[in-house]
Amino acid sequence: MKLFSSLTNRIFFASALLAVLAIGLAVFRVNVAVTAQAESELQRGVEEAGTLLEAYRSTLFEHFTREARLVADLSNLKAAMTTKDARTVQPIAEDYQQRIGSDLFVVTDPSGRVVAEAGRLHMPRDDPAAWDAIRRATGGHEAVALWRHPAGVIQVASVPSFVGPELVGTVSVGFSLDEEAAARFKALTNSEIAFAVGDEVQASTLPAQFNRQLARLAGAPSVSRITLGDSDYVVVRRKLPLTSVAADAGAGADADADAEEVEIPTALILRSRTERLRFLNIVHRELGGTAILAVLAATLLSYAVARTVTRPLGTITATMREMASTGDLTRRITLSPNARWEDEDARLLATTFNAMTDSILRFQREAAQRERLSSLGRLSTVVAHEIRNPLMIIKTALRSLKQDPVQAPHVRDAVADIDEEVARLNRIVSEVLDFARPIKFELAPVDLNALAEDAARAVRATEGPAIDIRLDLAPALPPVVTDGERLRLVLVNVLTNARHAVLAGTGSPPPGAIQLVTASAAAGRVALEVRDQGVGIAAEDLARVFDPFFTTRRTGTGLGLAISRNIIEGLGGTIGVSSRPGSGTDVRIELPHAPA
Image (cartoon, rainbow, N blue to C red):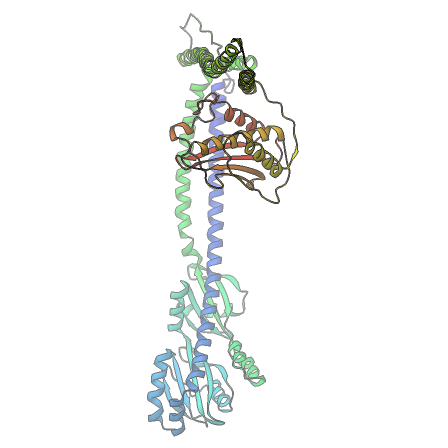
């Protein structure tokens, strides 16, 4: 026997191969997607860290610059500076340095001589950039500069201080880009940080042995990769310019020229790609193990399915094909009397299938019988209750006409009673026929607002106590393609029910006891809603209001809402009822702009 001649073997090998391919492809795609997502998240995270560092550094430097301006303009400091006495200026300088939290606070006299210093850093005496910034400040202009110190650089803003037109000194405030600042920024961004000026790294949270490699990144593209030791890093480069402060100071052309001469520091933000993607190895191992187990399970399951499904498949398929072609759901599978060589699973399945078809046949017979008896009982109730009463009234009227002599008023009354009851009988017969026969619709564009007004006029003209029907019509409602006459019949029926519900309450009906609303609905539909303030519907009766022959009124047939639902559903719409027993009922109808 050939390997693939058996249906069982074909199903088994096909299912196993499909499972292996599906699981392998799924594992591969998951690995690729997870890796790509991790790479994207890593790059996006390091770029966000760079933006955060740049914004924080800029905000911090502008903050210290504004603080320097404010301190330089304080009267107590200016008064102390006019003394040129270090012992007088020093306590004030220390106080303000602690208040603003700067790393460096330097006060000079008009000649540029340092009068007081405060903070953890001091002015580098051998740095020409520092003296140049002081010189510019003593010249009456604000200046920004980088002051070098052994552990890094200091970003400094130097501000002149005036008493009237007289220069009394300068105030220099700054914060450092050193190891301590790099550690703070590392905690802020959860990344490794390095600061470089020119081609030299001034401070870094990484070991100093990598400074030469990091220095080469200062002029590299904004996002790059670098290998340091046994770790691979993603690097983002951010320039930290000082020109915005000088421009904000309004120092003019001199300040702009000074800012252009300042060497701009560069911040390098690094995140370890090796560390961040290490979890992918665990993911790959777990996915591989899961894939192997899944393949084994799928192989075993494929074999089991092939063994259990293929045997009874042929017989059942043929029988079901006959059922589909004939529509006969009671077809049975012929069982062989000789079961010696017959598959037990197939025989059990065939027996179960025959039991199911027997149950379907029995259910169909019982359902048809119940439906006939139910319809006959409901119709008998309608005939007995609704038709006998008019007949008795007609009989009574005819008996009065047989009396001799018969006076003209009695004749008129008898004729009126007969006419009224004949109309009632005709209405009952018409409603039963409308419910029983298919509805033929005549579709045309209809103005719903005009239709609602017409239905309201018809109900207002009904004999009996007057009920106020308030119309709330949407002004820009577009025409709807529907059967206007049938829809008007539904509205009149619902409004009449609302009128009966209002009249059944105690006391006189309030103004606006019935409200008819038209509006646009969701998904390109329109809505009509009838709200009344009547007696409402009991909770146990609410689910049966659309059942044929169900009514709570003594003179009702119970077909009005059933016919209304048939009409609305035939027009492609929906109708629903909600009620609050004792306070009112809402009937909502939704229709498409054009039925399918």
